[in-house]
Amino acid sequence: MSISRISLAAGVALATLVVASQASAAAFYLQEQSVRGAGRAYSGEVADSGAASLWWNPASIAGLEKNEIYGGLNLVQVDSQVNNRGSTLTRPVIPGGLTTPVGGDSISGGPINNGIVPNFAGAFRINDKLAVGLSVAAPYNFTTDYNSNSWTRYDALKSNLKTIDVNGVIAYRINDMFDVGVGVSAQYTDAELTSALPNLSPALPDGSSSLKGEGNWDYGWNVGARFHATPRLTFGASYRSKIDHELDGKVTIAGLLGPLAGSNVSTNGVAKITTPWMANFGARWQIADKTTLNASVSRIGWGEFDKIVVTYTGGGSVSEQNYKNTTTYAVGIDQVVNDKLTLRAGVQFDPTPTPDVGRTARVPDGDRMLYAIGSTWQATDSIKWDAAVSYISFDDTKINRTETIYAGTAAATRLNLQGDVGGSAVVISTGLRWSF
Image 1: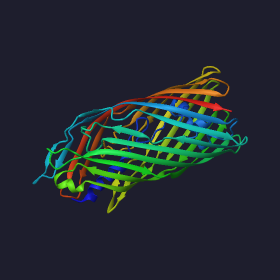
Image 2: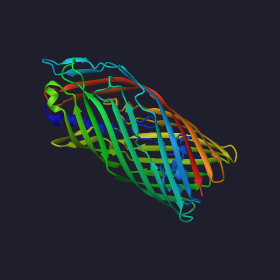
Image 3: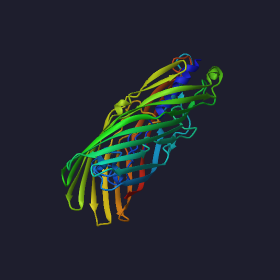
Image 4: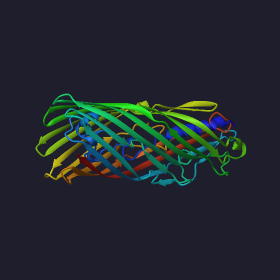
């Protein structure tokens, strides 16, 4: 049995971890980067102003009247269920193979972990036209955890992804109608994955695969503009580049018995993946003294995530992913109640980029609708308190994936994973904005 073949399978799984889905946005993107924006389903951020909009548009801080500091926390609570619908494992038993159910627990409740998503931004006025800013975000954070006896175990047990994005921005007000901004983003990623490996006999216990990957600081850029068509109507547009990541991984395979025992190994590997580009366009229209309508369209370049390139000592591979670009739509409203209180509401449609054929238990993703309400309370002359609650409804979808474990060897074992996925999520957000 070739050690490198098994290491390759584990290395591909390590890279696939980085595409694990998140409850709050399609695939592995977290859009909770503004509590104010959460209250209107992120429909107005690309055309709004201030530090809280920096993630969405670097031009948002052009022409600042005061310095601003923003901080937010978002509690993500997920109710999800992943059910087996006839998944099988075919072992290499002569003449035609032995096909058996994967076994284990057929219902996996709550595999997507709850979590807290923090974000921070600061904007500092240089003069009446020029400003600089800094945002710190966690745009791609996710954890799933299946029971060790889950029917998904040969595809996924534990998946953990962490990222930190630090974005420096400079913005300039050209005139009363045009603002522009540009930023440089430094992003760090690390990941961990565990899964089970089948032994050749159904009577033997499973082996295990444990993988950890740690990236370097990788870099991207973003640009944006705002057009104040009238004092009541503002358009905004921005573009955030893709970022190429390289993760250094540690692969440990243990518990393989009989003819597979010689393949228990600990080795190094490298996985290369690309996060998507994002293009945002939106508008804010003050239709009355106390009422503002918001709308946005976002095109996300998931097609950049078309493959995973894995290299390790003695070999390498390319794993096709076939993600598709998606377009997200959102509308919302801001309603000023009085000098102290502003209320918000919004709705967003966010389609999944994952393919119907090839979707895995690591990416149990589907189209979703987001419904949000929020508010801002003017606590003092310099402090505003933002709060929001979002409900996310997932479309029922299917896990549908066929893969070969120990591919290219005499022990090649075919996994046919079939399941149903459903769920919902609630996101509770709170934050402060301080001007000085």
